[in-house]
Structure formats: structure tokens, C-alpha cells
Length: 274
Image (cartoon, rainbow, N blue to C red; front, top):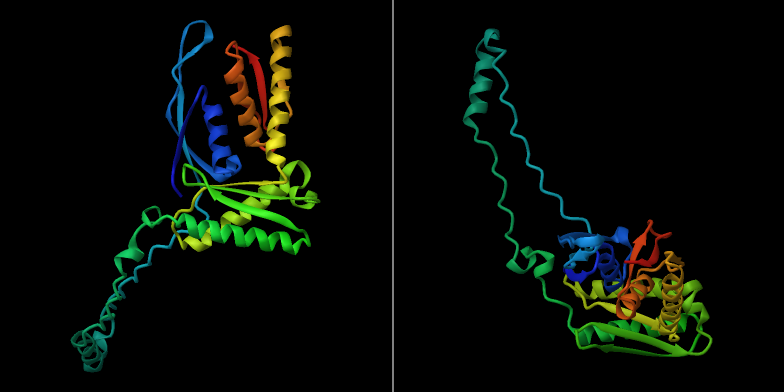
């Protein structure tokens, strides 16, 4: 998969943003810290963290062909038994070993690494994602409008809108994330080893509503920390929700900062004074 690079005030903030952009959990991604922020005066930092990440490859790599060991030459232990043993050894020495037929060379297109293969065409990706989501909704016995569009970055934004879509949303949007992963799998199959456009799915407008709620929660935390000077830990466990808090504090509260603590699925974001 392709690497995605991003900057943030801290390494953790950059990682959270990458997880949201990739749409995976932390244990499903590979990270490389390219640049760390430098320590400044009074505990402040200078510069930004620069981190890149990619989704861990799911398909196993082809195993390296095992070379056959050459047969060990047997020592002439029968030489003392007479001419019969010597004649047999001589016959074996005169018989050349059988040569294996040369393997058929692979075409250059098959020998290329995955990252060099063409990216799945956006039009094909839209068709595949739309067909999958329409069939998925129908299997639940629901009626909804499915729209898949390509944004300015060439990635996919998909939405499913209708009534009675609670089954497709699930507790805290869990079904949305699961469905999003299924659509990605469909796209990867269509890409046949190539890369695919990124995908973001919303069902029933849940993610937008949830984002608005997260912004309100962040605003309340900002006001409380400013008033008391005591850090607040917010109950936001998803990478996208944590990113929304990081973004909100960065936009409106330059006297405060944020950081994520813990491990998934108990990872939380903290708002605290600089």
C-alpha cells in the first residue's frame, strides 16, 4: 500500500490523523517518524512532528523458492569388494545429471512490485463501491439512496441515506466502520494487486452528526480546562473522533494542547494547559 505523510504538533497527534485518514486501527498500520518536534523554552516545543504511515500488507509475500541441495557423492566403500563395485561407480560417473527444464520467464508486468502497479481507475472504483453498497442495503431489506463520488484528491466519498438505517449504523457507528472495510476489500479485489482510492463512508449522516457532537464536547472541555487549569480526559475512542478534538483545540485554543494516551480500544484524548 502507498505511504501517507502528515504533520502535527506532536507525534501522537500526527499518528491519530494518519489513522483517521487510513481508516484503520493502530495495530493495522505501519509508522515511520520522519521528524520530531524540538524542545523549546518553558516546556514548549518548536517545529512539528512529521510522520508517515501505510496499511500493513494483508496478502502474504511469495515464499522464496527453495533450492534443491545437490546430492552428496557416495564414497567408494565397495572398492574392496571387487570389480563389480568399481564398474557401478564408473557407470554412475559417466552418466551426466539430468538438467531441469528452464522455468518460463514471467512477463515484466507480473514481476513488478505491488506499489508500482496501476491505481484502480476512479470510475471503476465508483461503480464497484456503488454496486456493493446497493446490494448490501438490499440484503438488510432496506431502501436507501447510495451515492459514491470522487473528491478533489481523487478519493471516494460514499453516503447511504434513507430512513430506518439504525441496523447499518450500529452502536457508536461500529457497523459503518465494518461496512467501510468490506467496501475496501471489494475495491482491492477489483484492483488485482494495485492500489485503490481511499474511501470514507457515512450512513444516515451519522458521522457528520457525531463530528458536530465531538466539537461540542471539545468546546466544553476547553472552557473547563481554562477555568480550572486541570486537564480533562474525553471519552472519545475512535481515531477520527480524537482527530476532531485535536483539530478543534488547535483551531480555537492556542493556550491549550492535546495528547492521546492508552492503547486501543481504551485510547483516549486529553485536553490540558500548554
